[in-house]
Image (cartoon, rainbow, N blue to C red; front, side, top):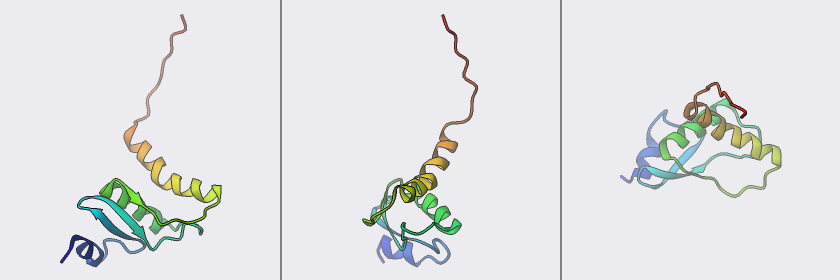
Length: 95
């Protein structure tokens, strides 16, 4: 059984999206998501999980409004930055 088949057949792993591995352990084509409609919490969580798992997500071409691009970016970028860059106080010295 191929890795692609194994991933898509694992029950409960992904319920809202279908990641299809492009390379073993790296990059996945995401199917089952229509980005032209508001993203449910389940889709948001699974897109983020797929990003953590595959590092690169390939989405099918879709014509999106700027607001739809922003919604997708908020799912993938906001959480990533929150985990990568802890809050800190910046002190500047003006000399």
